[in-house]
Amino acid sequence: MYTASDLRKGLKIQIDNEPYIIIDFQFSKPGKGQSLYRCKLKNMISGIIFDRTYRSGDTFQPAAIEERKMQYLYSQNDQACFMDTENYEQVFLTDEQLGDAKNFLIDNLDVSILFFDDKPIGITLPNFVDMEVIKGDPWAKGDSVTGDTKPVTVESGYELRVPPFVEKGDRITIDTRTGQYVTRVKG
Amino acid sequence: MDKEQKRLEQKKDALRKRAKIIQAIRDFFVENDYLEIETPYIIPAPAPEAYIETVRAGNSYLHPSPELCMKRILAAGYKKIFQICKCFRAKERGGLHLPEFTMLEWYSVNTDYMDLMEDCENLVSSVSKKINGRLFVPYRNRLIDLTPPWERLTVRDAFSLFASIDPETAIRQDCFDEIMSFKIEQHLGIKKPTFLYDYPSSCASLARIKSTDQTVAERCELFISGIEISNGFSELTDPQEQETRFRQETKKMQGLGISPYPTPKNFLSALKHMPKAAGMALGIDRLVMILTDKDRIDDIVAFTPESL
Image (cartoon, rainbow over all chains, first blue to last red; front, side, top):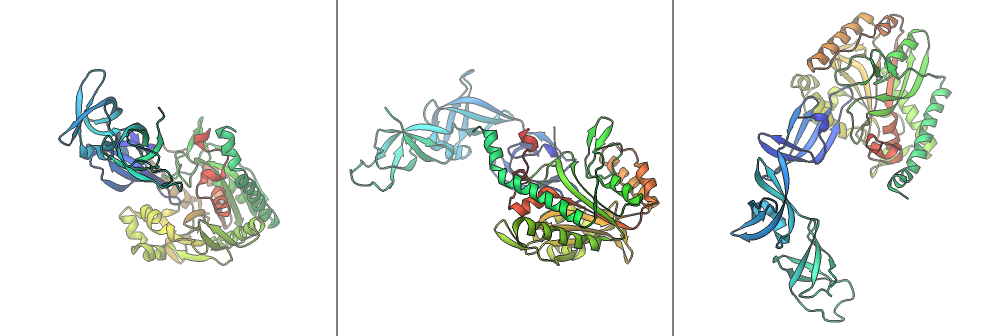
């Protein structure tokens, strides 16, 4: 059980049987008045965000969120399949649950799957993934020394902009939090 | 340089300025014939206040403010006193709050809350002149004019102006603090500092009720750029009335599941000797934030609880 003074950014609590994460938090206390805890809460299943103010004395249940290390296997019919490498149990997340994460799923990628009440509800990717460029115009020398970028497509079908020297067949590192190019992988 | 060295190195300018501000505050009071005093941090019986959680120290408490001891000194015949000390309030932590913070309190006899507002104007403008060389303070991309006189606004007017509700209704609907915090404070002290005054009588357990309007207490708060800087009032000097209010506050604490404090008997018996007086408590950390243009209290102290 949490009390109001435990509230902070990142804390996961349960309201009306749904898990919420506090994405913004502000403590205030008008002179001689009560402590007020203003929270921006995000529903971890629906993604809906709202503000709510709590007072000291309010109590909360921790959200029964569990994170399990799993591996990405394959995608089919707007669903992606993940496997627990210890007990071989398989679970599915819909494209909607995956959100932008589906752009960075490559075979055998190690990810964390979030469970609420033993049901999979979301995914945490590694911050960086390496992917192969499967489509992109070749580098015409002299094309650009000015730091221009060009569009390429990586193996998941995701499109992003990269420096002109990156070519089809190259492997590149992408930051999954921003979706942006980081570097070309040597070798 | 490791992380800790870097963190403290970055604070050097702010900490230097902080020291100068505290020195300037001290000079102001000494020049105005106030006696600097010290009172114990460990006290057996704090004033019961339902919304201030104290820190235990064995069978005693770390004082949440030096108020009770300072008033005992006034009751013994001292005329003008001030103190700069640490105060302790459990679980108060945020961009404007530290559970251990630095408080300035001053008291003088034969004065009331109107005099306190003037004291604030004189103190803060004199400190700013000494520190920054001028009366205009840049704070968060705005320029605040500290030239006295400052704005004065009753709590009733502030509620009607910014929330279209009267304070009594807000208290009845149990949303007074929320309205104050989220609808009113942000508008106060923007171009010039603002005093909010005449608080509902239920919002001031140690303040005198106004003789011309029994619904309000002679209490005022200073705001600069939406931040509460100080709180003061004409002191309640009637021991019977004070005891009654302590009892009511203790009842409120019990309702919230907080175990009651011992009655501050020595304070109550001193009160019968106390002359008419007024006293102000000012958060030095927050004043330093304003004068150094910092938006978090963390930026103007060497250590926060998290960095220990």
